Length: 455
Ligand SMILES: *Cc1c(COP(=O)(O)O)cnc(C)c1O
Image 1 (tube, rainbow, N blue to C red):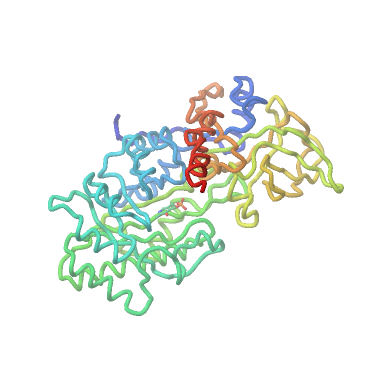
Image 2: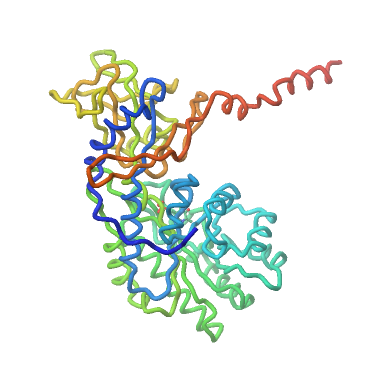
């Protein structure tokens, strides 16, 4: 496969327009229907345009590796598309590392971050030549023991600049007590990091991922500035340019309120330039690790309305999209609201006066609601709801609650005539696969155990 970045395609139409083009064709082709009631869709032109926007925003930086945070869309065809578009890949588990390698990323373009790397994972990453950011000083000691003499891996240390959190606690990685990285503002924290670099001439990178959704740009930029200042301090202390690159993480927030892309990657590089004037002058190579901001607005979920009911005066549309595919939204509705639109059985926008309706999912717990009292044209059986901006961290990271299958995922592109073309990304999980992953092969295990232990 080639790794040449391709030219940006013509500007992609806004997300909800693309949904209106794609949905009728998907229904006509049977990609979605009563047999396949919930499906994820990914816009490949949109993904390429987002990658191009990222590259262009950092265009003035002489040495930059943009990696995609695999957890945001852990699907091999998506990762391969991103590799072909010139991205590297950020991984945080043996599973993600495997997916990245299957997708075709060269080890030198893979970065391994994880707060819980085992000795075996570290040894394997070092043998492969994958870049690795140690989460803490104890992990550095493991690397001391495991690092081969001819190690090709770029090695870094993650720090927590402790600049504070954003609007969503669970997404804020730079609070005083975050579990990630070495806490710089703790007593002795900064000194211990400097000492760790003094002792290890092969440690050449500093890493910080300051936050994700809910964190203002200025806060993220301040965390990067703090990391930059530390790199300068360390290079001063060791007396040579030991730190040659900064991994500034990902975390650009996404606007879920409408089709607008806000903030843009350009907004972010402007905020970085203001907070860290020296960052882009080429003295440090840069690594980025964006996830949500590259994929979220390039995907949507379509789900069939199975029943429309009335309870206590409230209209409820029971759909097939719930906590198994919109996990964060269902479990933390205040932090992760999604736009929902209504379509008829042919995939045309439903018309009619807006009525407050609950958009419920198929899971058997009362809170399985994607939206409550949402004003939409009245939904009926056989209609479809679309959950917008769900290209990252939704259908690609399903939850197996109620043994519901992982939904199918299709990629699409639109031809100049406006007709979409589709390609499979992932099949719906089959009942055989569900049974197999639920211990089918050990079906007798507990019976045998209790028989053996019978007095
Ligand atoms: C999750 C994560 C990212 C990506 O975050 P987004 O908010 O999706 O951009 C990048 N780096 C690290 C270390 C992460 O844990």
